[in-house]
Amino acid sequence: MMIVLVLSLLNLIIAAGLIYHYVLLLAGRRSRVPPVLESPIQPPTHLRYAIAIPAHNESGVIGRTVNRLQTLVYPKDHYDVHVVADYCVDDTAPVAAAAGAQAHIRNEGPRGRKGYALDWLIRRLLADPRHYDVIVVFDADSQVDGEFLLAVGRTMAEGVQVVQGRHVISNPTTSLLTTLADADMRLNNRIRNQAKQNLGLSARLMGDAMVFRREVLERQPWVGAQSLTEDRDYGLFLVTQGIRIYYTLDAISYGQAAARWKDATPQRLRWYGGAFDLQRRYLPSLWKLAWRGNWDALDKLLELGLPPFSLLALGAALLFLVQLVLAMLITWPLTLTAVSALTLLMAVLFPFFGLILTDAPARSYRAMLVGPFYILWRVGIGLWVRLRYRNLSWVRTRRTDDA
Image 1 (cartoon, helix red, strand yellow):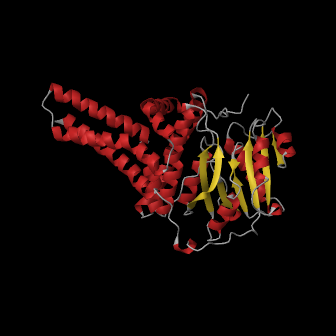
Image 2 (cartoon, rainbow, N blue to C red):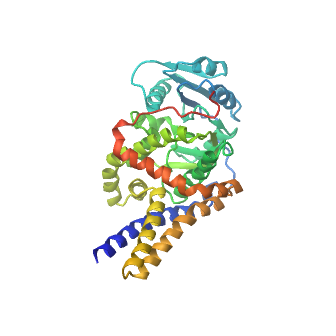
Image 3 (cartoon, rainbow, N blue to C red):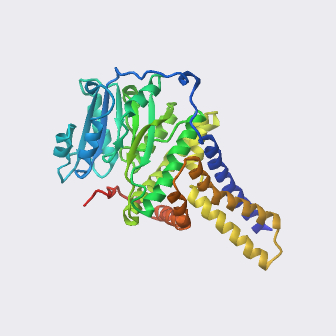
C-alpha cells in the first residue's frame, strides 16, 4: 500500500537523523588528546591577543566582564580588551572604559545585527598598529576562565588557525528554562563539538569564545555581517574555504541563558531564521564539496540539511501513534510498528545518554519531565520561522542581570 511506503520512508529519514546524532554522541563522549599533546606543551606567551566584545546596551554586565578579563593568566602587556558600544543609548562605553577596556563607539553604518558591530570592530583591530596576532570574540556577559588564553595557546602552538572554546551556561539553576538550556548546551557544545574534534572535523562556531589568527581574518574577511547567525555563517564559510575549526575543551567561557520563555523565544526565532537562511545559501556549495570527497563539508551538509533533533523526536512520536491507530483500524504490518517504536525509544533516550556522558546534575534529569513541552516549543518556533522568515529581526536577549 502507498501509505506503508510513505510511513516507511518517513521512518527511514527520522532514523537516519537520529543515527547521525548518536554517532556524534559516541564520538564526543570524551576528549581525545592527540599524540603530540600527550606530553605537556608550554603555551606560547609571545602572541598578542585582541579581545573583541560587541555590546548593545550592556551596561549592566559589561563592567563585570571586563574586570574578569583583566585577571587572565597571561602577560598583561600582551592582550587588550576592546568593546564596541554599538548604537547604545546607555553608558556601556564609559562603564567598559572604567573597567579597563578600550571602548569604541559605533553610531553610524547599518544596524540591527550583532555581525555589523563585530565586522566593524574586527576591521579596526586588524588595522591597529599593535599588530595583534590573534583576535578572540566574547559576548558582553562572558565570564571567562582565567586560563583561557593559555588553553588556546597550547592548541595554537600546533599551527591551528581557528579555535572554538567551550561555552558553559552560568545560570543553570535560575529557572526551569535555564536548566533545559544547560542540558541543551551540554549536547550541542560539549558533546557535538568534541565529537567533531575527535573525528577530525570542524567544530561549530558558537558566537562566544571564538579565536582567530589574524591571517585568517585578513585572507577570509568576516562574512555574514547581515546574518541572524553571523557566527555559524562564518564557520560554514571557513569550511568551504578548507579551513578547519578546532575545539578546545579547556578554553572555557561562562554565559547566561535567558531565564524566561518570553525572552528566549525571540532568541530562538533568530537562531532558527538564521539556520533557514544558511540552508538556502550553503547547501549547494557543501553538496559539491561533499561529492568531491570533502568529509568536513559532508558533515556540515548533514548538520544543516537534516531535521533538528526536536523535529526528529516529535516526528518519531507522531509516526508511532499513527501506526497504533492504523493497527486498530486495519491490518497493519507489526514489523513496521516495531521499527517505529525502536526509533521513538532512540529519540527518548538520546538526551539522557548525553546528560550521563557529561556528568549532568540531578536537576537536569528532573527537567526532562517537561522535555515534550520544550520540544513542542522549539518545533513551533521552527514552523513560525518557515512561514514568517522575512519578518525576523535581531533583538537583544534580556539577561538575568537586567533590571
